[in-house]
Amino acid sequence: MKRDYSLTPEEVAEILNIKKNTVYELIKRGELAAYRVGRKLRVEPKDVEAYKMRRRESVQFPMMVVPTKPNPPVTGEDNDVHPSLSSGLVLYGQDMLLDILAHHIEDNSDGIRVYRKHAGSFSGLMALYEGRADAASCHLWDSDTDSYNIPYIRRFLPGIPTIVIHMAVRMQGFYVKKGNPFGISSWEDLTKSGLRMVNREPGSGTRVLLDEKLHQLGINRLQINGYNNWETSHTAVAIAVARGVADVGLGNQKASMQVEGIEFVPLQPERYELVIKEEDMNKPAVQSLLNTLNSNSFREEIEGLGGYGLEEMGRLVAHI
Image (cartoon, rainbow, N blue to C red):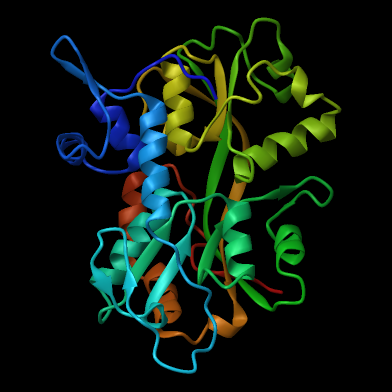
């Protein structure tokens, strides 16, 4: 995607879900490229993406097979040597709920390390199938059944017994500038003349929702200006709209609450759920995940964030 705007350290911190001071440290150490405009630091989006890719490439999780001898230590993102993944948890997904869940698991367990992989729903399900994940989040809408996740889980993990645990209900909708200058209220409005869209990456649940809706309505996706311009997070999409790089983007309501100058147009509630293979359910790390998900301390922290429906959190949705 071609971008013609730069980011402030505060915006980079939002995209990476880290503190602003950490962004300054990354720049100081030369891990994140930046430049000055007057007295202000600016970062190019392509350099943020390059940093994220380097971090992802630094953690390559081995296939999870039954070992014939003790597994060697695993090197994590901070280059420390960690215990075997048999005593850890590999958790795929992009929502901040999972980052908070990971912190609670590590804080309240006996040495369990959570290895986070920020990737979309397709990547998470494939990682489960290939044995590279213990749990993966999923929010994939199927237009044929008007349902979430289960049809995709059956396709991505054929013949593999799985457990689906509910996390939250999130509202998906359009990000537009304050005042909604294009009067956007429906999927059909994406074809309006002069409208510029910013999309999400292929394989993300948000991209799947868009493609399914366009197919259902008979709209040619390639006729949408900006369809092939995409970002890898809800926050980055909202920032692109706020800065005027695009006029509309699609994402969840929570991200719109974090970016100034954005108005949210609700479209559809979605079910955000965790998928776990049945054979992994008795692993101590997975049991710790389930216990944490149902704990009062975790629920209270998520309630404090706002923007999530938590009535069914921790409920068994399906045994496939």
